[in-house]
Image (cartoon, rainbow, N blue to C red; front, side, top):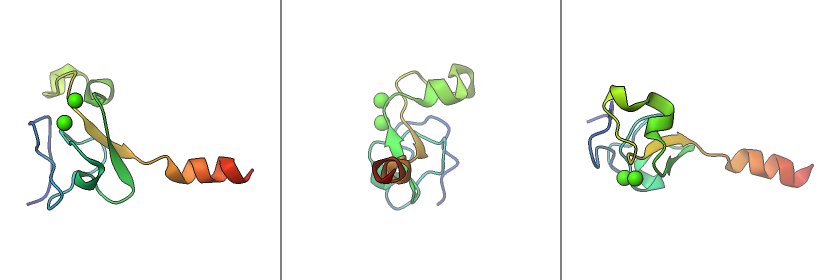
Length: 73
Ligand SMILES: [Ca+2]
Ligand SMILES: [Ca+2]
């Protein structure tokens, strides 16, 4: 099963990772490669109307690559 999660608790899993902006996730392993699970950010992305609650965690792109760039500059 693939994602399309819209706020259900623990919808994302390591066997069916969520894409960007989907949740709820609990660990980075539950997000697609290159993204990570961020705490309580779904409301900021979607607003509460979309079915997300303020405490839902959504997958977002990892900033690791940006940090590497800054570290080298
Ligand atoms: Ca969670
Ligand atoms: Ca949370």
